[in-house]
Length: 619
Image (tube, rainbow, N blue to C red; front, side, top):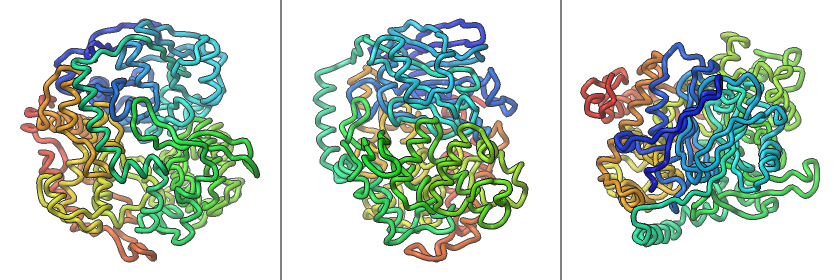
């Protein structure tokens, strides 16, 4: 049964391994994936815990339904973040999570530090710590190939780090396959700090579910409805780059470190259709009905021979417009470099954009950088990626992420657009007020995947929005009204999605017709035999999010940290379709108050005692 999946505690300092069942009570409270991960992390978490210390756990957690035929097969990787210094968590797709399930495990808790480079090999519940010296210095693709060759099995799934993780670049990623990345918050650096190069998994155990006939029937009914939506049809044709066009046209794109929010007609250089000449097909993650991932090949020119998967919308924005770069081939190549080195593309682009604005304003100069940091300079972007991953030259400073503020000085701080020490992503939230609140309150710092209500872009009829969100919500993208409710609702739903292993794109993220709590309840019942009402699931989402909030409270966070970069409040957008848009502090405070009330937190954003008691998560 699905509930037979176990948890492994792996202690790298002495090589001991313990495998234990996951209690039914823990499943009922947190499901799996991100939920169980957060429960486990909370047992270690303290304000004094150093992200690079052996005591900091690295936790892999597959969703409760990962590995079954469904709407995604994702895994969360969780730890204290070397990038922000606070809560670290990243979600990864592909095949790795499903393979871990087929090996009989759903969670790994890795502590300690190996004296030498190692990798883990997991096969059908057996775990071996193997010598990884021969893998040292290899990129993320060569690492996977070498491990499969050594093990003599092409079907082994590998999650690994590249040189960036080995060099403890604070925003290095864990990667699997050609593109799948647990990118944000620096989980690759935690892995590197433990001298752990990779986790390799091979499973051939049966995945038994409670009622297979009814499950299949229900799955196909829901899949048919989902595949008929315009959103999934477009996603299967263009992938996530289709989102770039909307962000540019509406004026919420990051351009030159958010100094501008659109590139106007020049956007066609980077829109989804511009990728078609390089695309060699579309593919999906394990068990997913939507094929949203491009495979590409550059056949001629400067980057001839470059092949891979992607780039996603986030990478096009972060390594493109955010840097003033409209050269699509350069963006594709830069993305692939990040993938091979094991760098998060969003954070890499954000820190380079920060440096470029400092260069623009004369706060740093070429005597320090050694390379010109002019907007749109593709050669300099590539050079910085090399330097960051290898921790050489000016890149060694940028490899410190937000902690480079200590080197650049006070004058630099306002130009690093960050929230809770994690940089703003590929968008600008001065126009979409729901996006702004979601960024400000995210438990892992600036993050669009914790709560972003992309439905807001559609400006659906208000009666439809009220039915979805259970209360009045304005259908105007630029309005503050009801956006506290909207963000709160998506935070809870997304926490449940991650605990189940569902892909965000196949839920009520961008389509009102996609599955949500009612469908989740039935899928859980038919696959596990466990009974959850939609209300039960929403409570689980609330429990997960509030537990995450409590870890931030341990770090001293409160209301003053649920805010946005000064640019958002002080600088109205200067041109384009969103011209004049700015965040009004008084209105922002109102929706923040509403958001806190819905969560059951006090006026400073601290969960109330009766909320903690109701959710069963103690003080």
